[in-house]
Length: 239
Figure: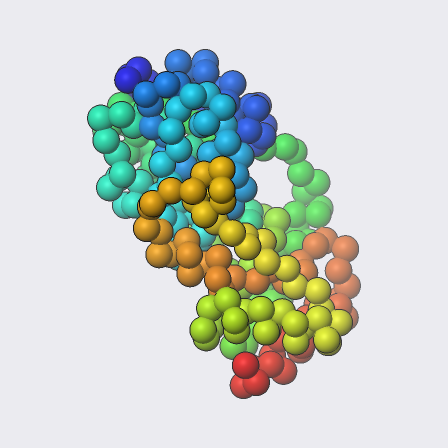
């Protein structure tokens, strides 16, 4: 194993190729393990494999959908070389806690690169999210850690009930009312054929089964937002 030391690197962007290049610069490859999330895009795990290393999947914080530092800590072995934290749906990864962990265990911390966003569009999405937070009933609205700047790339709620069947029924009922909701993470990365592994990730599995993304893009009107909330609230006792 190559000892990466305490190095915080930011990839040029969030693609697998950019993350792979950053791992290669750190001399992370064959024989190394890199801890990555399973809930979200496959790019981090793809990058690890492209670099010749082995992705190890950690579980998420059930509230933020981001990597759970305690789960990460439990997976560190003598082969672990790095951690790749990923912001999810616009909520930033817990870089402070993961950075401290990387420091203690002499690991590299590889952060995905981001692109500049229109400040006005972000402000509108945040305003839309505040409205939905206050208007929605019967679903679990997104959580933001105190002090973080959630930019709501997606507004993802959790549907109480029996996981995937109730979530899918809720989405179909919304569609019949003219609201297009989507499943952002239909399959966790550790369940995909290219990365199938034996990790037990209960919070990741639950989130993939009961989460649903509602419209929150910056172009929505107040009338459209109100319709989204009314449609959701009308289903409160039906599913």
